[in-house]
Amino acid sequence: MSSEAATIKAFRFQLRTRPGIESKLRRFAGMGRWVWCKALAEQQARHERGEKYASYVDMGKWLTAWRNAPETAWLSEGPIHPQQQVLRRLDDAYRRFFTNAKGGKTGRTAGFPKFKRRGEEPGIRFPDPKQFAIDAANGRIKLPKLGWIRLRMSRPVMGTLRNASLTCESGKWFVSIQVQTSTVTTARDIAPTLGIDLGLTAFAATSEGEIIAPLRALARQQRRLKFAQRAVSRKKKGSCNRRKAIAKLGAVYRKIAHQRADWLHKLTTSLADRHAVIALEDLKVKNMSASAKGSVEAQGKNARQKAGLNRGILDAAWSEFRRQLTYKTEWRGGQVIAVNPAYTSRTCRLCLHESSENRKTQPVFCCAACGHTEHADIHAAKNILAAGHAAWLVENSKELSPTVACGGVVRRPRGASRAAAAPEKQEPTDVRSLA
Image 1 (spheres, rainbow, N blue to C red):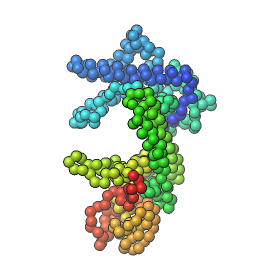
Image 2 (image 1 turned 30 degrees about the vertical axis):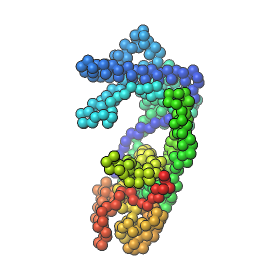
Image 3 (image 1 turned 90 degrees about the horizontal axis):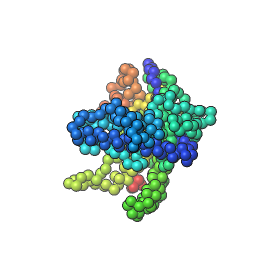
Image 4 (image 1 turned 90 degrees about the vertical axis):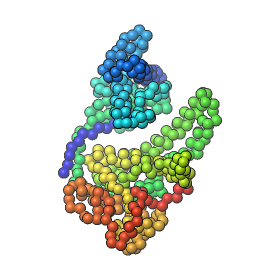
């Protein structure tokens, strides 16, 4: 059984800009921010006068008037398409706000559009491939009212061009080129060949017996981060020195994010190249990293230790790992099967005996019933692979064993403990080492 689906990809490159081009880019981005704030102010004024919300078409007429008005004729010096895209984004923001308001959401959760400050520019987006051109042989891109700009083109752009977006990070300009590739035949009749157990002591263990050590990008830069944060706190608010210190602090955070992203991309690409279908734990990272402070009335317990554990969970970036692995396997015609992680760490894969006594220590799994001994994380990965295979059988409408369903063991053997269900992710963790 197979299906075909078009794939949308994005290629991101750094622009090799000159001072004159950078000045124009900053000005065009500022124009977009002005258009956003002006249109938002006009919408609020209409609301105060009791008038109806102006749609994107009406806001487009405002933009035409602004570009032709003598006092705002400087808007016409920039390309019109990015300014129109700013209004479209504002219209989408209002639509989401109206939907949330109808659903009963209020306050911050409603998502009312906000005015953008300097440095919060909405970006420069060209929605039509006719508005730009790529010269791959010379590594450059042609944009309206900017001309040809060289790129650090690290790989060829494959596919049909759709749109291009320009953004600025730390004074460096990047372009994201979105393309549509040819249809990929997705095979649904391929059984999973790899199970992955995620953790903190070891970032991942596979059913093939591979142990992947964690990167711990945040922990490695903790000392530099501490000094940068302290420098910001010592500067006077609103001063030039504080802005410089904030820029240095942001550079440290960006380095951490780039190190983590680079490491995850290399790891997920390697896994997706070797395996078409992969079984992975369906971890609820948001719930697992919730604060333990509690409320004023009911104070939480071990909040400091839990904060260290949460920091380690977020530094591991399990959700980003799953996101990258999912779309990379789909690009290659495969898929990621998410399975329930409950009991995978303490259920014997041979006799199906489930007990907390099977996992007394972090590295070793020893079944209290049959005596089977194995590396705990690798054993859990093999359980995840078996659960993923069971879920794959359900998807393919084949006969399913009565002991497994939807990717996990749900029926316990006779004599097994009838204790309450264990947490979805249960393994001994020394939170002191993560504080």
